[in-house]
Image 1: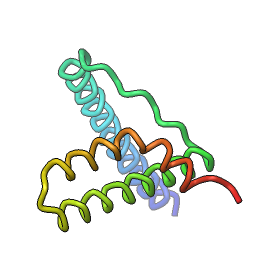
Image 2: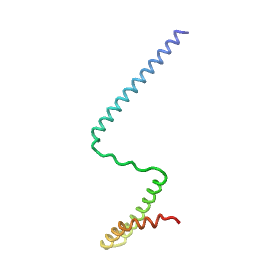
Image 3: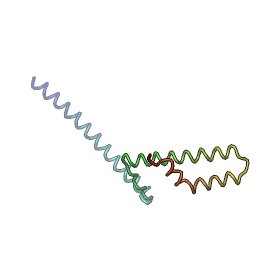
Image 4: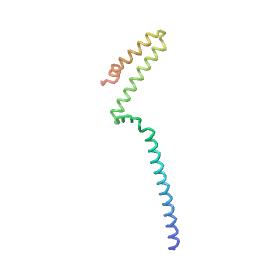
Length: 109
């Protein structure tokens, strides 16, 4: 019985050693990959992290809604107007009036 137990223990230890070697090799590959990526992209500045949370998500959703409304309005003007001056004036007015439209669309009560 004891020889069989020793044999199973040796098999378990061999399997654990193989797994440990695989993990060490994977870690070494990951370190080399990270170093290579850092060499290639180290000179590129990292973008600032976006703020997270409920309020930031609400603000992004509101800004996206305002942008969608303005783009839809400009597409309607473009589709139903033959005059390029009116279309251009609408685009300029949308860009300049976007903060006011945003305030009107997202104000409380």
